[in-house]
Amino acid sequence: MSKKPVNRNFIWAQAFVNQLYGLGVRYACISPGSRSTPLTVAFANQKGIKCFVNIDERVSGFFALGLAKATDIPVTIVTTSGTATSELYPAIIEAFQQRVPLIICTADRPLELLNVGANQTINQWNLYRNHIRWFKNVGSPDLSAKKITYLRNIAIKAFEISSNKNKGPVHLNFPFSKPLEPNTFSDEIDADSLMEALKPITFKNKTTKTNKLTKKEEKQVNKIANYIIEKPNGLIVVGPMGYDPTFRTKVKLLSKTTRYPIIAEGVSHIRFNNNKSDNFVCVNYDAFLRSTKFKKNHKPEFVLQFGRTVTSGILEKYLEVSNPLRFLINDFGDIFDPSNKSRPPLKFSPSVFIENLIQILKDKNLKRMKNYWIKDFETVDTLAEGIKTKLLKNSGIRIEPGIIQDVISIIPSNTKIMVGNSLPIRDFDGFIGKTTKNFEVYFNRGASGIDGVTSTALGIASIKKPTVLITGDLSFIHDLNALLPAKRYSIQLIVILINNNGGGIFEMLPISSNKKWFKEYFKTPHNLNISSIVKSFGLEHHIIKSKKDLQNKLNNSLKNKSFAVLEIKTDSDSSKKLRKNYWANAIKQIETEFS
Image 1: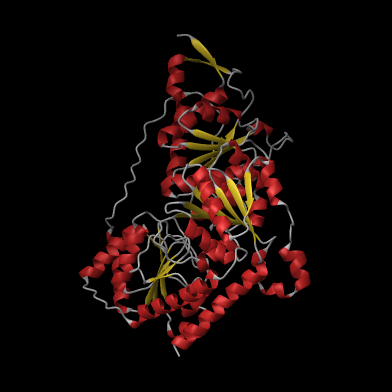
Image 2 (image 1 turned 180 degrees about the vertical axis):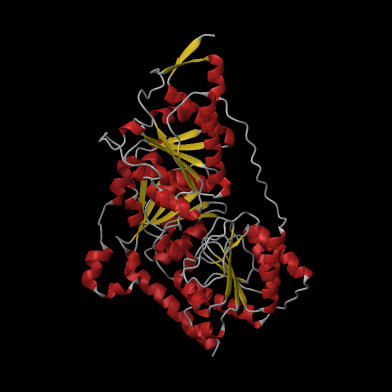
């Protein structure tokens, strides 16, 4: 049989990529580089995987993060060797903290070029060790049947861990010796062996989701049910997390069964797709929990917490000081309690847990009538909502919390929303009320950094659904290179840019009273002409002058399916005063109501 000349590195990389495709990987984010040539060309050669090329590795990492959030399927990232690999770290940290599935493939020099001063070479061995779910140094390419099988099994294990077993980012390090290009040959192989090398192993995921509990799990849920029966004054806290579509319905049913109010985080999806009967969903806790009198007389005995640590420091402090019997429930049994006062977390799918808990409570014949506890929470939530609505109605376009409300009122149901960190996420949590509209909400609350926000939103938006990003000026400036893929791939994303000229969130800190230190070291005004920057990338930018202008520009951008930055220059001092007025008025009315 005739032999065919091949490049060992390319065949090795292609066998790996074909196996990933066979497992279900459909997206790859690639940054150009020489040492990663075999991987890059192998992904480019696999027509079933859509590749996004980003020259900035940090952008590429966060773009992949957004893609993985939107699809919940592992997305592959490819970089060359050296410091390029370290640029991925911020996105990897966020993926680790939020359990977002990524498969990071870093190209490397071969063993003989390590620690000898070779150019563009660093120690990449388990580089991300503190924020990775699994690491494997793949080893040097070898086209023997045994080694190809070994490589395929690495791909399978990486996919299984990343997508399910210990969900999150995994790191595979690929050493490659020259020659790197597919048309430069290093070996000869017969045609049958070549075809066999490139054929992926058929793999069936053996993990099947079931609603049936083990005996141990049933015992745990029974214990929770008994606590609920014993303790009528409880809360259901729903923190930030991507929940399955049935969770919203089930958690509301749990609230009706237990008569526990739902404390619904802004980005938890529970505030959306509501109707008038959903009074037990509380959204204004960051205001009404500032009332000392209300907190003193309404200490929860029992708390079920789903999702991550809540955004509101006021809520977190209330839970800490009240010191209820507190249980955390999430898929992987992760700890989300800075006070360190909760019981050991329970590893459950939230929807499966609630479904079984409700059934057990029915079996135990729990029939709890509507009591003062839930009525009082409804009362203060309604009072705060009325105060907030009145204040925002009279606010202009330069008031930050009002912008958040206006955007929600304008955009159509089923729009995707990415909420940036710093003030936008806090205003989203503190000022978004309940609505009948339905939205998919995304966020980077793993490490809560301002880096990579625009890139993440672009990754989400690349799935071709209308997407709106609400972000601050420092976050936007921090991620300007994200405008390159926005232009290159014509991604439809509307950026609501809240520009308070740097560091507006620090206005809320005690240090703001020291004007000299605050202005020089915290506020850091940048005075940049963002319009010129955006237009230099060939992208659309508008300065918004009024609420009507916002509505028109936002609707036009949605209609045109384009990328656009709608910049609103805000007044951080007046925004701060509105927040404080809201809280003060809420405290006053609530304490009068309960005097």
